[in-house]
Every structure is written in structure tokens, then in C-alpha cells.
Image 1 (cartoon, helix red, strand yellow):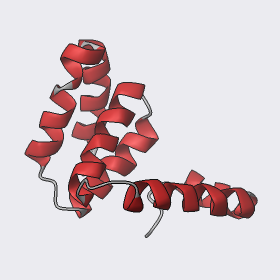
Image 2 (cartoon, rainbow, N blue to C red; image 1 turned 60 degrees about the vertical axis):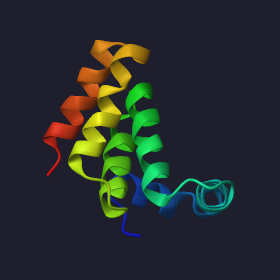
Image 3 (tube, rainbow, N blue to C red; image 1 turned 45 degrees about the vertical axis):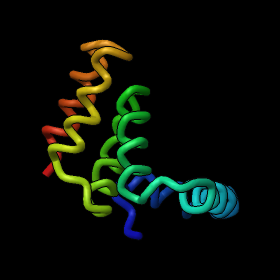
Image 4 (cartoon, helix red, strand yellow; image 1 turned 90 degrees about the horizontal axis):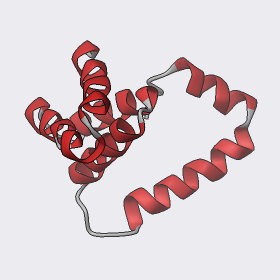
Length: 102
């Protein structure tokens, strides 16, 4: 999987052992810990990164959700769900990241 952000590539080069362990944990959780489909797992991650205000993660998760077959409408619906839970300003931050993406 190609890195979306240059800073992640730099992190991997500077801390290869940490990256390896982190990547193994992520793979175990993402791929082997439950019945959710690939697309749904990435949409959940879109919601989490959007709610947390993690813009770089949100860009990554939107990209991966699209690669897993999520439509822009599904991603937007996922982001709209933030309004009632985390508030309108949080949604607007996530929405602005989404709208700036190609």
C-alpha cells in the first residue's frame, strides 16, 4: 500500500521497528478481529478520525474507504453523523478536509 503522506514515509524510515510493530497490530485489528466488511471498517475509521480532528488520518481513511468501494455519498453520510454526536464545528472541520481532497 502506497503511503499517502510523506511524513509517514519519513517516520517509517526513522523508526522501522516501531512501524513494524504498529503495522502488525493495525493489521490484526483491522483484518482479523471481527466481521465488518473492508468498506465498513474504513468508514468507521473515517468517523473516528473526523470526530478526533485528525486531519492527516482523515485524508488517509477517506482514500482507503474509496479504495474499498465507498462512494463519496457514503463518506459524506458518515461525516454528517458527526453533527449530533461531536457537534457542528467538528463536522465542518472534517467536511472541509473531505471537500479539499481530489
